[in-house]
Image (cartoon, rainbow, N blue to C red; front, side):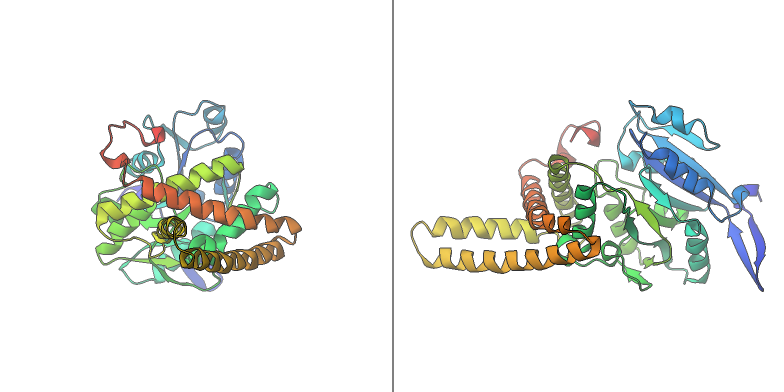
Length: 353
């Protein structure tokens, strides 16, 4: 048995913990601002250093990211396709461990992160193949990014998914985002790996296929990762449009919704347009539309108050604008997918979408 397949037994108190070899994979592109913080947090994990490797997969960065990475004792690979799915597949292909953990280049992992994931894996039933935790917000990030982060933790922002709300209870979920997830490598390989056509949503697609094989996903509150929120109003709108577009592609690929709430924004947009059109001739549709919009904005206002409370800042009220923009951009992206499908277009790289 090779070194990377063996386990290390270490006594912690009166309990012996087994440390299997883990490959930590980070897909990046142009992350010169955050990659150093990410790598240093991984190098400082409370886990035997000889029993995990760090694989950085760079998507042909045009900034100083590769030069920064080369300063550290990590494995650096180059991903010519540039998209995240290809980066993760390349990382898995080169991974020595039977367990692979994923995070992003703009994340900072807790020192106990890997140890917590491994401990839960050792205690879990065999059909649990993926483990992950909360995607927390940096209090030092710009105001816009923090508002977006807290808004997306809300029911209106995420549909109430446990990992988006950062639930404090350990329980099973239908999927886990790959900024904070560890898999049994065999489960990824058996499912066929990440679909490299997807520019976003590639983790949801993989998790759907893994789940269909009878496997489960465990959410662990103590396995914590801090994730930088950034961007501008324009980039946020574009990102939400892409999320909607690729969620529709997931629906078309699998014939059912990966997440139950995925279609709601697009349905709402079509319903609103229908009512608005009908109100030209009839008064009742306009009254119905006004009533529904009133209820919607009451819910948005309540959510904005919650965001302001969490941020301890009046700027949380910006969620009044951010949440509607998210819903509209996402819904339009979802609808656009049915007129111009990226999965059947002649695109060499998903980064072109």
